[in-house]
Image (cartoon, rainbow, N blue to C red):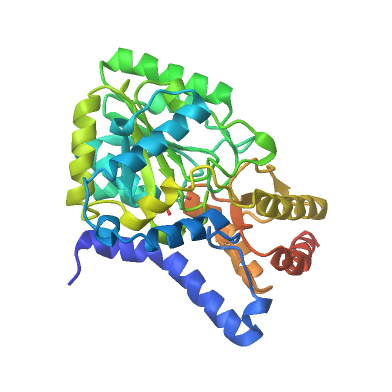
Length: 395
Ligand code: PLP
């Protein structure tokens, strides 16, 4: 008999599994090329050429024990130095290898930092719509996820409600920009106001509240829109970065945490996170890919391919009468459903061989997420289905 906690997890995972099964069923009937799967955030553009070159170069290195061995739980020091230098150059910060812990993707990093920070019943605030896995990550350490309701006007965080929901038990706030599922980039104005609120509440309660910035989409920002670097606005900031989307390497599980020296209890956080990496069973981030990304810190995926998808999908859907905010980053479009029930809308979309995810999964019913990290042709072929859907519902 599996644990009660896992019974709950299995039940709540069934929506995604059901969608996966539905995709397979449809592909069996109509052929995979006639099923338009917009359900997953799996990158559709190739990793940059630098990645392949780096893998080959490292594989040809005669000292392969040094490539594949254990190292410090925080990762290779030279790799962490290269990352710190690269961040400093881009954002005028002053990090060293001491501020960087290599992680098993953003997911690993979030689990490490939540294990480091949370006591049972501590509260972690996040803003809907949000990446649904936060629920599980917070529950892993017996924390309580407090969700701020969505501001559907422009999907910037609802700061009024936020202010009222911070309590002496608030230990952390998770923000994600560019955002999954909306593609919205939190503006500098938002970040300044959010930081002020946090500072005021820390003073009021005499507590430390950590701002965890989950940033797998930092590099996927269109038309040079600025994505503020949060350590510069708020001292108790911890950044969780990932190469899953920025270099199209989600299966390789590689990312890092940045723990600023300005953060309260910095030294203890670093040692605890180091140990958390070990005792959560990660031990250390994948060795080969630490070495690979250190050689690819300036490499970029073909953002223009995602941008073309974004323009096509957004412009066409709006012209059919759909209501959505134009995403400035990531590779998702969050669309208001023409009927109230988002799950029902997804079912109707399935009948047109279109797979999308209900907003309810992200804490925002009445919307759907369309992941446009697919071939341009897939969008072109799916558009008549999207058009027919809204026409049928409005008829
Ligand atoms: N955070 C957000 C907002 C995501 O969308 C994802 C993956 O889609 C993750 C974290 C996990 O990323 P990783 O593959 O780096 O663990």
